[in-house]
Structures are given as structure tokens and as C-alpha cells.
Amino acid sequence: MDTKQYRYTSDDFKIKKAPTLIADSSDELKKIKKQVKKNLKHIREAQKKMYARRHYSVLVVFQAMDAAGKDSMIAHIFSGVNPVGFKVANFKQPTSQELRHDYLWRINRELPLRGDIGVFNRSYYEDVLVSRVHPEIILNSNLPGIYSLKDVDDHFFEKRYQDIREYEKYLTRNGYVVLKFFLHVSKDEQKKRFLARIDRPEKNWKFSAADIRERQYWDQYQAAYEKAINATATKENPWYVIPADDKWYSRLIVSDIITKRIEKLPLSYPELNEQAAAELKEARQRLLDEK
Image (cartoon, rainbow, N blue to C red; front, side):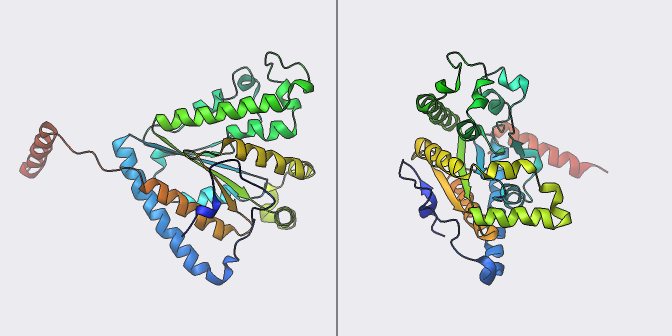
């Protein structure tokens, strides 16, 4: 599958031109599910080697508007992955303790261990997305030089974009593969999914009145995503903008991108040195000699 069309490495992303739907998966659902299953098998096998060698870590970042399908995406893409080497972190509104630290403090605490796969369901990008739409949030951080909303200007966010670019460079130098996905859902599709949460009792628990309140800021969020992606998309750590109106097709694209990226890593199981091999041989013989 050619996924280059979803990959952004510079400041040429235009959110209004990016499709939210490539194809309806219903006609090819069986074929798509088969390919997704095949991709997941590759991810599981790669995770075993990563965990055994402990050289690399994979950090998968999901950002999206509400109801874009982040939770179901994570549940499907990483089904069957060994939970011992897998972790999901969900970043919501900062706590009072988190606000007393730099905004990346809580992120560092949730990074996957070396050899593990970690998923951020929302991430440090919230600090240049939600806070850009609601700059009053920044005032609660007690930052030096930030005393009013006038101080939370374009220059402030340019500095944060720079922080993020440097942070991702740092992670890459330390063996992290950073994969960033923006699940791009249309406003009409979001409306359908919100109505489904209201109209279907088994989905009522997913509904939040706050989601409806945030919907009125749709255009502001779209602008914030465009700015953030353009400012932080690099060749080393690109953004992938995934059409998310059709859930199964989006799962196919994401699983394909993750699979291909992990397969580029020089993964293998550790080889035993002579002493360890001799000890293994001796242990085997002892077991065979048991009565």
C-alpha cells in the first residue's frame, strides 16, 4: 500500500485540502480486515524482538478531534500485542501537580521503556492545540513572563513548536521511533458519531457534554492542527494525516505505516556468547538427566 500521500515532512500541509475519506471499506471489508490482521502479526513479531534486544522503543502518537476513532484504532491495531511490553497513556487536562512542572514533565514519566511499544492517546501536542484554542489554560501554568492573554501570542507558540521539534530529535537519538498520526475526521462524520453516542444506549457512556461545547470551536481547532503539523513535521519525524471518516480504511493505513516503519529497524533476537551457550547446553543436559 502506498502511504506517501498521507506523509508530511515540511510546512506544506493544508487541512482543507486533506481528505477525510478515501474510500468506503464496505465493498472490500473482508480483504481490508485480512490485510490489517497480517499487519498486526508483523507488529507482534517485531515487538518480541524489540523486547528481547532492548535497543529500540516505538512511540505512537494519536491526535484527533473528538469521535475520530482514537480508542478503537488503538484497540484494533495493538490487539494481541504482549501487554508486558506495551503501554497506553492518555493525557487529559493537567493536574495541579503537573502544572507545577514544565509541560513535558508528565510526558517523560509515560515514555515507553527501551524495547517497548508506547501509545499516547493525545500527547504533548495538546499544549499547542487545546491551549491555542483556549489560551487561558496557559495562565494556570505560572510561567515567567506570561501575565495575561496578550502574552500567549504567536511567538509563545513558535517557541513551543521549537521545544517539540527538539524533543522529538532527542527521543530519536535515544532509540525511539516516533510515529505521529492525526486522524482527520469531517465535521459531518463527527456529528453522526455524536448522535450515535446519544441514540444508542450502549454508547451513552461515551458521550460528554464537553465534546459538544468544543465542537463550536471547530474552525479554531482546524487552524491549530494545521499550524502545529506544519511547524513540527520533519523528514526525521513526519506527520501522517489519516482520513478517518471510514474506520476500517483508516486502520488499514495506520497499521501499514507502523508495520513498514518497524520493519526498517535492525531487529533480531540476542545471540548468546560462548559462556551463555555453554550454560544453556549444561542446563539442557541436567534436565534430560533427571529421573
